[in-house]
Structure formats: structure tokens, C-alpha cells
Length: 120
Image (cartoon, rainbow, N blue to C red; front, top):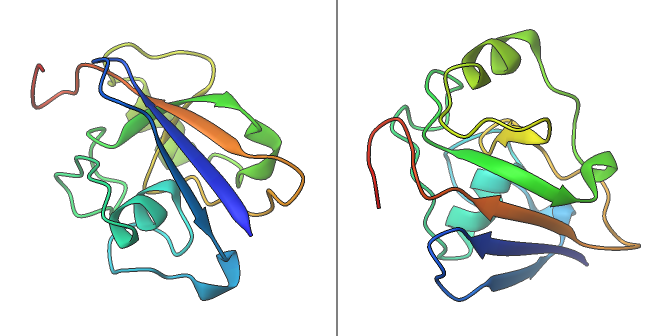
């Protein structure tokens, strides 16, 4: 089982999702097995105005640990991330960051307070 820990910059209580990556996709938005796919498939919301098609930055997350367990960034993702508020060196688009292997740990992400569409 893989584990995804979600922290919120807003102070909302953290959430932990344990899942079997072989069961992906969990729903229809984002790449199968992506952070967005896992979150939505387990009832945890993450804004995604473009439907998870790598066309906006509303699903921007900051990876706090286990970046090595995620798929590589594409050039398109990197170009879009340049427009995300609060960009960090470990920023990813939730719709594109596929959790490839996390059996020996957990992937920890922070959902930023601000997106290009809203302020919380």
C-alpha cells in the first residue's frame, strides 16, 4: 500500500490516504495514479479548473517529502508551474505528478493557500 499525506497551508486538518497504486485510475481527472487522481478518488478535494488536463495551475501542490516517488516533470508542466502563485523548487501539478512507488515511505504534499483562481 502507498500512502499520501496532505497538509494544508490554511491550517485545515491533515489527511492521509492509503491506497494500492495498481488500482489506478481512481476516477477520471488527471493522470492515472496522480496526486489529483488519488485525492479525488478518495473523497479529498483539490481544485482542478481544467479537469486535470495540464492546462492550468489550480492543482498546484508543494511536495514536502518523497519527491523520488513521483513521475518526472514534463516540459509542459514546468512551463505552467511558472504561473503558479507561491512556486517552490518542489512544486508540482497534482494532475501530472504520478505516485510511482512509495512502499518504503509516504509522499507528503502541501496544498497552498492561494491558487490562480481563488484566495482562501
